[in-house]
Image 1 (cartoon, rainbow, N blue to C red):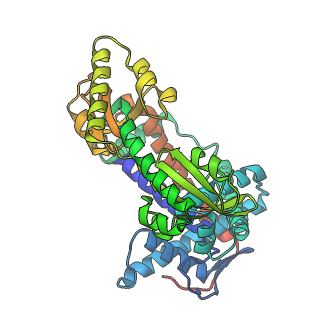
Image 2: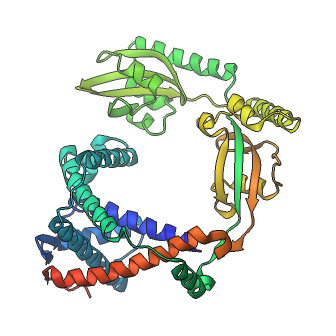
Length: 437
């Protein structure tokens, strides 16, 4: 229960930070009414900031505010108070000459830009979504990131010396033990994955199909029309295979190596990647970016390929039950890309929170050190080993001292933080110009 609450708080905090990061740019295609809602020292809160954050939060969480005026008012009030609090802390951080490392800011900005590009698909789509060039998005994001890091550092510095003693922890536990919740059942598991790979016959069939398409292209037929007719890429096929402008790192390396080596208007031979087989056409080069079209023919495994994978994994299981090392077999046989780092160990999970339903079903019936028979997921076939199982239980001082101490410390810091904010409100001039109550 406590873990759920902490995760919920973390999600809300991250969502709020994300909304702050985009507050200077409209993504709704409408003009929001400008106007100052509050002045805090040298900082201001705009009505447009509040409106945009409320709409963004409602959109992300699928809340219909149009038919719920009370929810709208409550959300506006909450966002307004959070923004005022953030500005108060920023003013205090500036007064205390809190500084942040420019390299750290730049690194975080680039990570966030990359994350957003991954979400929307390309840099051009990001610019379109934010209605601004990437330079402005980066500039706005940099200021917001620097401000947030200043506030984080201010809070860490302020409460760095807050501690809790043994008596405080014991008192906290006595007061809250009935509401601390329980530690849910957890399992520590490892697995070996074998992907279902197409046979050579399936590959040959795909190559033969592409060879005929390539011949048609060489005979003058339209690449666009052939892509619309034959390409099995659901994202680009209907657009004549057009992938738009991309930069290095956007595609898998096999595709990218060939694409960047083409001249404008040139068509490649047949290129194999993890997605299947491609024919690539370079449309345009623009600096370090290229615009390409492609025709993709996927290679689908057959029922025989699936059975072969199952049999292979069953043989691996037999070898382990007869004495072979699970870790060594995982390193030698698993198709999981992380196997060299973790030797197949997936880690510790709450049983009910296992994301893959098939894993939850298999693990439920296993004893410690037992290995499942092969089972299929969307990733391929697996065998899973139960390394340990911890039953559901209540938190106790004897078994969970560190965890309970951390809870007690967080409660103490939260109380101190609220007192501090109240005192800062008396020190820093605040002029409220809008009523969201």
